[in-house]
Amino acid sequence: MTSRETIKEIREKLTNESYSAADWQAYQEDDRKGVQALVLKEQKKHAERQKNLEHFQEMLKWEQHLWEQGHTYISGIDEAGRGPLAGPVVAAAVVIDDSFYLEGLDDSKKLSESVRERFFATIKEKAVDFGIGIVDAKTIDQINIYQASKLAMKKAVLELKHQPQFLLIDAVKLPELPIQQESIVKGDQKSVSIAAASVLAKVTRDRRMKEIGRQYPSYQFETNMGYGTKVHLEALKQLGPTPYHRQSFSPVKEATQS
Image (cartoon, rainbow, N blue to C red; front, top):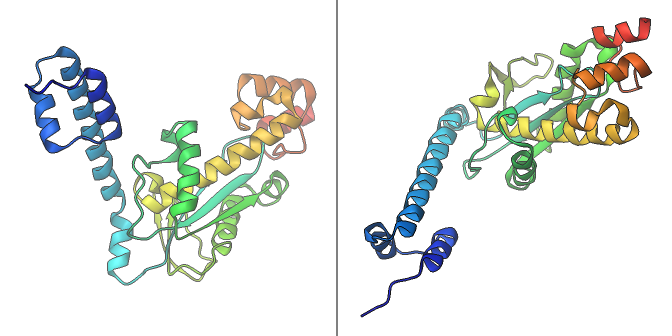
């Protein structure tokens, strides 16, 4: 009589995904509670994967539609950092092809920091092309945050190796660029390439804010990323603005005038 695999052996096979169809059938029929708990966990994992795949395919519809029209070099564009009181606004442009798949990709704000960091490296590795555009606080004060966001986006596009045939942009249009484009409201939830751009933009900006935070620890930029938290506003009130603050933003302006 063939001895049954131990629960530890089954767990390792499931973890490594090294089990056969026959193994899976046997595990489902196994009467041990520990095995059934592992089977349930595996079923949930498969269901989550299927859900992620379907979500990804739904988000890929914009790109697929344009690919079918003959546009092969399509760039998704998004920005990070419109709302903070300090730091730059950062934009990213990402070009993908039909081989690109990143399970769990979504609007960067919905992802944990650790997942964003992991996705950042994967996107840079798997994307056909990407570009980053950064506009500092001084320029934001000079031209306003809306125009600065658009400028960062244009810079990101110009960082690409080749000019895209079509742009998919989160919520704005860039008429200054002589490229066909579509503005998509909540595009980082509806387009794979925009979602990928949102990750690159946010991680790039967050890393920059952590660097600034080491220079100015009292403001806790490394955790608030320049947003107006209680600690940040208190430091602003007591110490005044840093060179990285946006002087045109009301709380900063008030701190300067007081």
